Length: 157
Image (cartoon, rainbow, N blue to C red; front, side):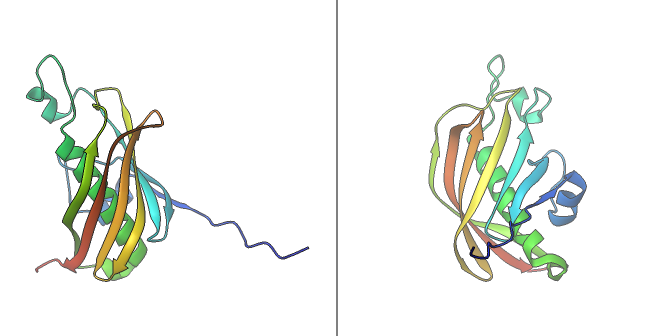
């Protein structure tokens, strides 16, 4: 019998860990948890969308819909957190900047009560730049997708 490769242990990160990785804070921290982190290769951010989100006050009164740009930002935060988790303690004094967005598509509105899963998968890397294909899913259905570029930079530029 051939030797089988050991199963990978995928990591997760709670909100406390995410807040150590990312500089974002309320109301702009858009992921609540990370699961399935596989090094720099992939990971999934999770956002529980509630009616208490400040953007619902104006987008749109009587018909609340999460703005598409915030879905893209949550994808970028997921990719950034995956990169920073991968580089580990080396990330002290570093930030991941959202560098590019391509091929963005929005397929279905995200509304209060939805739980959004932001899946990111590495497509290209040339440190300090990482590119990810990102998809947002609600109840297993794709609601948005985009190619996200992230750049690791010194905190002070």
